[in-house]
Image 1 (cartoon, helix red, strand yellow):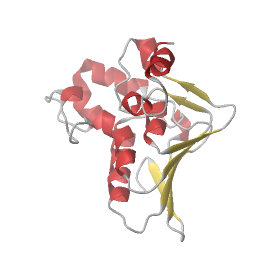
Image 2: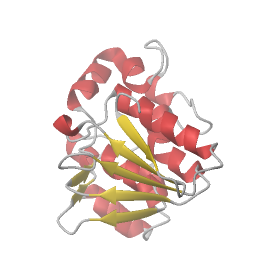
Image 3: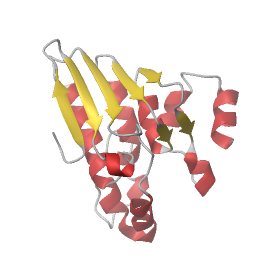
Image 4: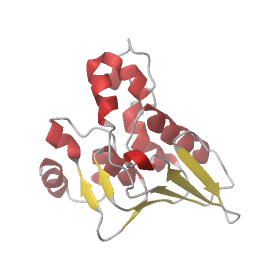
Length: 180
């Protein structure tokens, strides 16, 4: 277990990852970014794992970016938010092959060689939706609200999920969903 994710290993090889920041609807902060990447990288190398289930504790899967963290990033502390030195290029630096740290939060799940299932409930907004898009399968509760929140803030939805979404829907549908 990390500060932000509880890992539950079942004897049959299924690993549950519970985003554990229920008081903030599992919003993505620096520790959650780091914990998701570390968990994905560890599971990618674990030959005993047969499947991974990512879920959120409390009333939401993930409400997206923690806005307080985003404000610090906007004020020049991008390194703190994304695990990079504050003087680096921030979002531009490719820290994980072709991906930066923010993109790797979603992209790492495609590198895990077993089925990854996102169990989505409550909300999956912005970065939370992009994490879910990184999974191989999404099981979504009927009353769940999904949204690409970045457009509301005038941001490019660039955490990897939109790239991955092209595999799931036609590009015109992806653009319409993103823009609206």
